[in-house]
Amino acid sequence: MTVPLLKDIESQAPQAICELRPRGVSSTLIVNRNAAPFDNPDLRRAMALTLDRRSFIDVLSGGQGDIGGAMLPPPEGLWGMPPERLRALPGYDPDVQKNRGEAREIMQRLGYGPDNPLAVKVAARNIPLYRDPAVMLIDQLKEISIAGELDIVETANWNPKVTRRDYMVGLENTGSAVVDDPDQQLYESYACESDRNFTGYCNRRLEDLFHQQSRETDLQRRRELVWDIDRTLQEEGARPVIFHTRGATCWHPQVKGLTTMVNSIYNGWRMEDIWLDK
Image 1 (cartoon, rainbow, N blue to C red):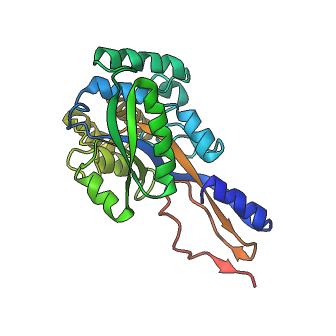
Image 2 (cartoon, one colour):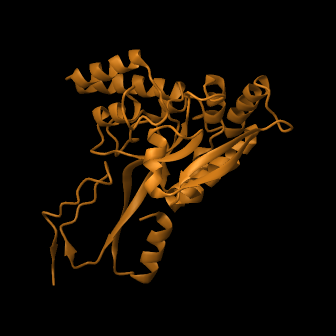
């Protein structure tokens, strides 16, 4: 459940046991990098620079969320970049106005400004977890003279639409299909031929590093490789990560043996160890 729903549960069923945990899901900005004018890397960089990640977390989740790169942030995430490395990436400096100043300079060089905004439709799946952050995204894009219009897409049409890249800009919630592991996240979302590489990002040299980290048996060496890969993904704006979401699980006291997971919304639901004390 979302944080607002969690508050409803806590008020209506005070006896319930609730835990708020990372979900292995990140809200991301997706941009069709093969379609003009978004085939320009400078424009994509400006869009990444305007993101105020902390405001997304504060407004949408009551402060319950995490800022990170492609991998789930620590401490729950085993492969996420340390905060000091993260802050050095484009758009991750906590000085949002400084970031936006740089973004506005880029937009001006490209010919856009308050008197000549770039009009674009921002696609979002028609559920609150997509619509709400998409509305905030549109508001933040206005800060750099991008005039976004919300394009609501019904759930049945969403995955086909983004898979065939029939969009310009969108808000996507990217969930880890298995667990918190680089092999799952990197290949699924960023490999050149992946069906879930919704932005069309392709870097063959970086993909060689995907293979290298997968073969690496030394844990710390593998972690360093993953950090280098993640840094490149963020610097190149492969799929700018807005924030990593947290969600709640609640149960009545008579439900025993439930362990909530932190690495995937799909993990831990086989219920082998769950029993009712009644």
